[in-house]
Every structure is written in structure tokens, then in C-alpha cells.
Length: 275
Image 1 (cartoon, rainbow, N blue to C red):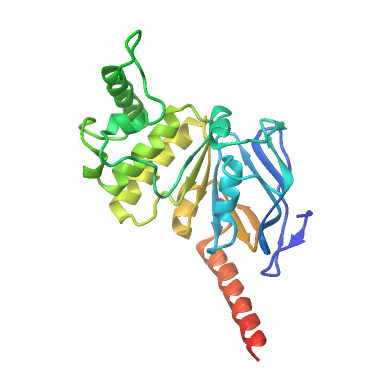
Image 2 (image 1 turned 180 degrees about the horizontal axis):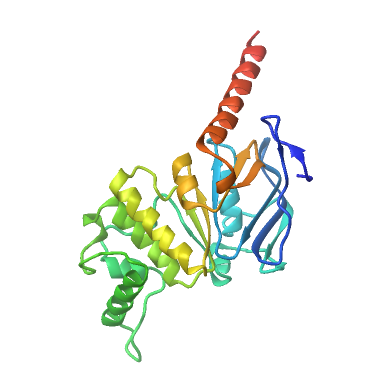
């Protein structure tokens, strides 16, 4: 999107400019699924230690963008840069090795496994020369990792199925932080949570943010959560970024009005087609 391009609400939003402290830049990304265009000429950037909130209606392209960044899907057009170098992940594992990890709504936790086994899922510590799981080491490191970011899970040998939604989400986030990722992608980290559990995750995100080491991109729907947890907000509409602002310079009212205007225009278009 060129500088001062008008967004779909009729306002003007300055496109993000590349900066020396950008850890990730996404430039002119497009993705199609047959006749469906999921992303079109999308530009996005994240600075070191920054929390970027990503808003958008269902089908706007948020999940597709996250899957491209984490290596699950390949873009049809455009390029990405990680720490100033060309970034072309061929798989989720290759992205993870380069410091980008994701936490999705389903969390990728195994209900029957213990807390500490889930913390090391697919990254298990193994004793040698006999190939047995190093349970004592994993339990100790899991406790240290959870304590470091202030997650209170009293017992680490219980199955995660016994934990609350907030605790399960905290474990999934802690696992990615423990993997020494530089960039975390959080897809609806507060989905289907009550106020108490949501507060637990917001506190966890705030503590990680205060350390300033990890950058985060969070897909969110609640505007209050965006303004509370994020430094900057991007809005995706029809596969492009139409708003890029520091959260200190926007409000729930502004974000709501932009989205309401989008619904108005969609309804008008639907009525026009039905005539």
C-alpha cells in the first residue's frame, strides 16, 4: 500500500515504513486459493520487543497471514525479511529454527500428557546412552521456565486436561517463550476465556513485553484487549492493511466506527446485487 493510501473507511493511513529496529517485515504479500483472494499487496512490520495487535473480520486474511509468517503456507507474491535478511520459511520447523513460533487456538497440547511433557512436546530431553526420557530434567526446566514468566502451576505432573483454559493457554505461551523464539504469533490467545483467565494471559503478555526481548503479533477481536496489551494495531480488511496506528493514538470508538462502516458498505453492496 503506498504512503497516504486511503483506507476503506475513507480515511488516510500512512503505510508502515521500514526501520532499522524492524525484526520482521512483510512486503506486498498476496495469497490466493483458487478464485478466492485471501491477501492482496499486504504490508506489515514489527519492531524488536513490540506487541502488534491484528484486527479484522472473519475471512479478512488474518489467519492466512499468520500461517505464511510461520511457514505453514507459501505466499503467491511478495517477500519477507527477518532481521533485515530475506526470510522464506519452507515449513513450520524451519521458521521455528529461525526464531518464529506460533500459538494457535487449539494450543497443540495433549490432554493426557503432563504439564512438563507438554512443555517439551516434540522437543523432549533424552538421556544417553540409554534413550529414555529425562523426566527429572524436563520437570526442573519446565518449573524454571514457568516461574521466569510468572505462571503459577503448582503441580507439573498432572495432565493438562485438569487445568483451566487460562492455565492451558499460559503453558502454550510459556512453551514458545522457553523455545527462545524472537517472535511469537498468538492466534486469539483470549478466545472463550472469562475475565479472570483473560487477565492471567494479559498479565503474562505484559511481563514478556516488559523484558523487551520478544516481539509478538496477536490476532484479537476485543478492542479493549488490543488497547490494553498492544503497542500498535493493524486492521486487515479484504486482504490488505487499512489501518496502522499506535494504540495510544486510537480508541475503541474509532476502531468500532471503521468496522461498522465496513458492515454498512457490505450490506449496501448485498442489497444492490439483490435488486
